[in-house]
Image (cartoon, rainbow, N blue to C red; front, side, top):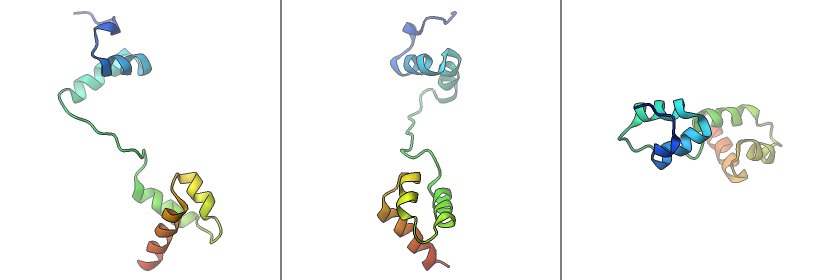
Length: 87
């Protein structure tokens, strides 16, 4: 069957094809069909981001780091405190 009408797709594949293209939707289908997939809220690896936060911390830039990495200031302080405790 030649697939060139996105209306034939189930809703999630239709949305993927409309946003990312039909080939991408078909590839995702072949890669993951039948599986349940959960996407983490955060795109990046938290451990790596924590390393960057510790490297970039200069003693005065908690707010800037919180904004940059989309963490609360409290979380930034905890990350820094824990990094000092483990040294």
